[in-house]
Image 1 (cartoon, helix red, strand yellow):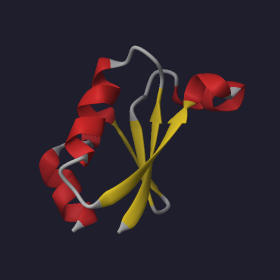
Image 2 (cartoon, one colour):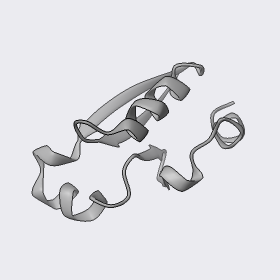
Image 3 (tube, helix red, strand yellow):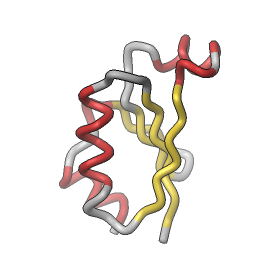
Image 4 (cartoon, one colour):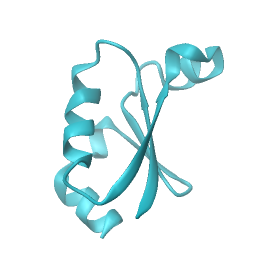
Amino acid sequence: MSEVILYVKDNCGLCEEVKDLLSLFEVQVVLVDIESDPALLEKYMLEIPVLKIGEEELDYRKIDYFELMKRLQ
């Protein structure tokens, strides 16, 4: 099972949608709250949710079922 990092914040509807989408795949999801780190908040504030797969980061515009199938299977 591979591991991915999902950058999120509280009360983020898109973050919840991506979490639900990731539950369809056999991956371990590590949630990172960007509000707990000022540097992460500055970097990702307008881009969350952001999914990190290996060294590649996908912002919310690029995260969909078909893109995840291509990258996670």
